[in-house]
Length: 315
Image 1 (cartoon, helix red, strand yellow):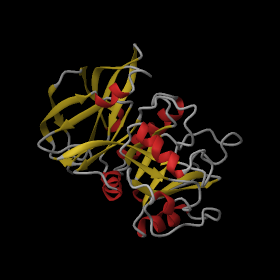
Image 2 (spheres, helix red, strand yellow):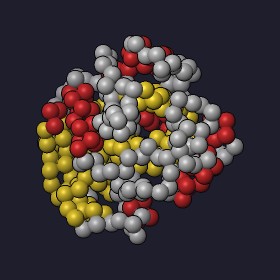
Image 3 (tube, rainbow, N blue to C red):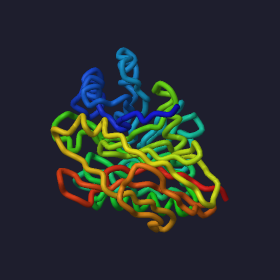
């Protein structure tokens, strides 16, 4: 049976520009009620062996390649790339993928030069099938901030072109201070106990949810996020889990109010008050459907609380 596991997929330590030791990162992850993390220090794998010393929290090992034209996330790759001499971005992404790794695009609309040199994605990727995931929600800000909204819009445009790219949240976690919305994370839909291997597979398969804390669960005929279902009339079972949100209620409060379902060209095909139960949709072939939960943050309405990765339909 699949379960939602809260994870942070973008973390830094003293091995690059973070303030955490590896041990402190894992201890803080435990205090934040996270089930797993990705260790993604800039341009180095020097913290990987140290992570093996602390097995309490699963660590999926990766790297954030920091360049002047974008930050490339690589998870569990068998090869490294020369990030300082990239002339063909597709070739380098292929190297990561061919070696068994996953490719991610970090904070694609982060402020660029001179504040965050290279943080904004400017590479001209020819084949987006080489990209496994994109941080459409980054740095603990709301998903509706301009940078995150632009990232989400780009991601949706790639889905419209037929690419299956997994959406993720990335805190870009460097230190304990200054964190916003501390319960926000990427939730991974995993069968059985969480392991680094299952974390990788969940990201690869598109089994993610980006959430401030309330967990939205959606399924139809035993299938859920990342899966492909038949087009036509489909009945979806909808439920919420407030357990994680309650852990952070002394910092901020969440109230679920509205369910939205969007599809190609950012078209809303369903919007209504949240009620546990069932929603019936008429699904078009060769499309995708994204369920969103909207509501109140600290009593203020019209906030996006949770976003599920797409459910796809057959061609």
